[in-house]
Structure formats: structure tokens, C-alpha cells
Length: 157
Image 1: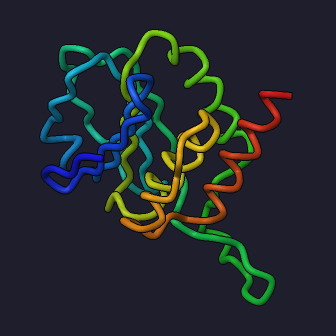
Image 2: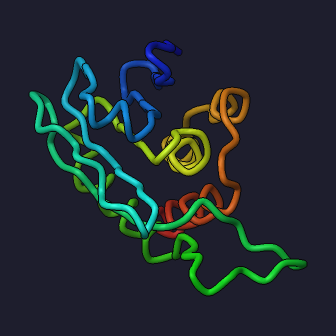
Image 3: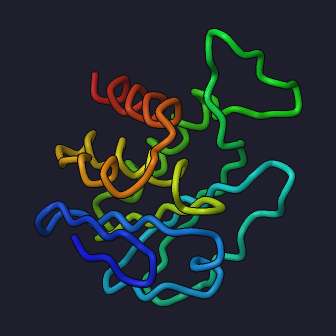
């Protein structure tokens, strides 16, 4: 694991690196030493992040959903958009499309603390890695994590 400029980089040996960051850092531009893809998550009421076209960038998947989790005791207001199973499936399809051709997956959200580490942790676990570091360093959104992991499990069966 390498931590630099607020980004957490987790490496699965030589297979895949996961870089978790925030909107400000992704818009400023990241130095990624291998080919990579970006999963860009933004709030539905904000514009998508401006992901710079840099050397090594292969593709960007843009998703919009709020950092919220359903509960049994609270009703989610109608203006709050939760991540959907369909969005989790889009993540899986995107990763499957590019997995063999990239060395890193960059995931960002507005603050880089909840949604993006949840996606990265689930992808890491689905690829056989240890996701414990994400849980120590961040506060992953458990709902997002479960959806992405379920989509990965469904894809593998």
C-alpha cells in the first residue's frame, strides 16, 4: 500500500492497483504509472467530474448517486438517489471489459471517503485481494459495497 497526496493505492501483487481519490484530485490530474480506467462517481445534483485525458487513461465510467444507505428505521427522501443494482452491474461490465488491459483502477467520488472506497474494496475482494485496508483507512458505504460485491458474485456464477 502506498499513500500519497490523499490517495490510497492498494496493489494486488503485480495484478491490479486500486487508487481511491476525491473530485478535486481527479480534476487536478493523477500520476498513474500504468494504463488505467476511472470510475467517476458524482452527486446527481452536480456535474460529472472533469477527468483529464492523460497518458495511460483507457476509459471512464460516470455514475451519479448520493452517498446514502437504506435503513429499516428511516425513510429515504425522494430526492435522494441510492446506488442501483444496475449501476453495480455497469461497474462489473466496465471492469471486465478493461481488466486484462489495465494495471490500475482509479475510483473517485466527491470526498473520496465513502462511495469510492466501497467500490474499490468490493472490486478488490472480488478479484481475490484483501479489502481490510479500505475499511481501516476510510468509511466505505456498506450498501454500495454490498451491491458491487453482489454484482461481482453474480457475474462469476
